[in-house]
Figure 1 (cartoon, rainbow, N blue to C red):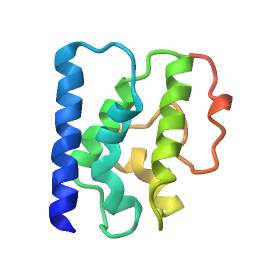
Figure 2 (cartoon, rainbow, N blue to C red; figure 1 turned 60 degrees about the vertical axis):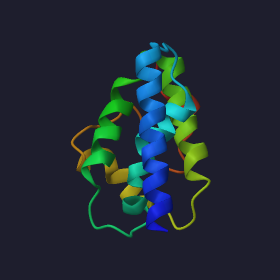
Figure 3 (cartoon, rainbow, N blue to C red; figure 1 turned 45 degrees about the vertical axis):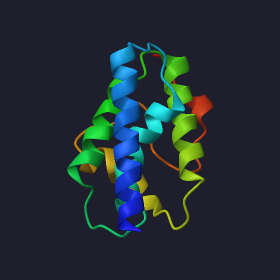
Figure 4 (cartoon, one colour; figure 1 turned 90 degrees about the horizontal axis):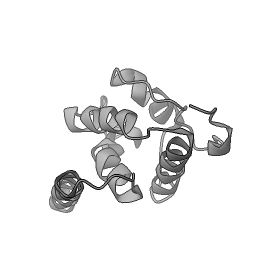
Length: 120
């Protein structure tokens, strides 16, 4: 299992690096997923605190969306990614940006309506 997670993290990092090198301007769900994948162990309660890679990803997520439409898109990507995992802890998800010292322009919550994000 650890080998699979490590491989997924490496692939996610490569995806982010590829997007950075190619100068891709639009935010993608692949990019969002890659940044948040290191947080899975924390938001499922398997780790007591988020690892450094997780917090780095949260900080990148904070910097990604430039406008309202992109913020809403990133929010939806996060919700879709969260739906793929069982056992997510709502408190850990909600508190993740604060724990990482990088508040997001929208709350992290499984039941948050991304369409309510105010205009930037």
